[in-house]
Length: 66
Image 1 (spheres, rainbow, N blue to C red):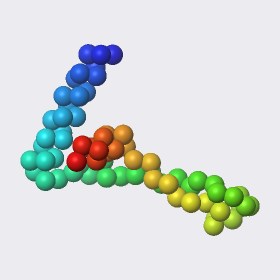
Image 2 (cartoon, helix red, strand yellow):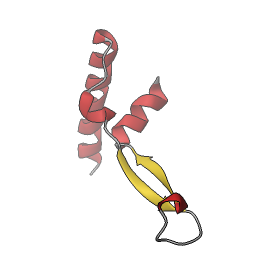
Image 3 (tube, rainbow, N blue to C red):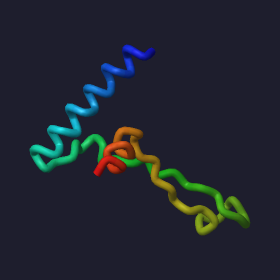
Image 4 (cartoon, rainbow, N blue to C red):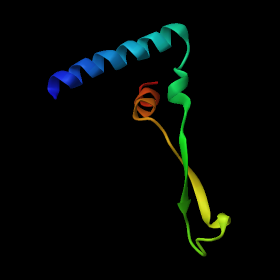
């Protein structure tokens, strides 16, 4: 597991460095999965839900580094 982690870190660092050099962000990491989260009231009414966006983990790591 440790060896896989080290390899993954190097790959992610390479992608991040390329992004900085070219001033771009990979399109695949710009996609979020939007899911409805129930608030309260009748679960049959659309207004009783709010959307939340689930982002890829690498996207979150990249944003923290910037």
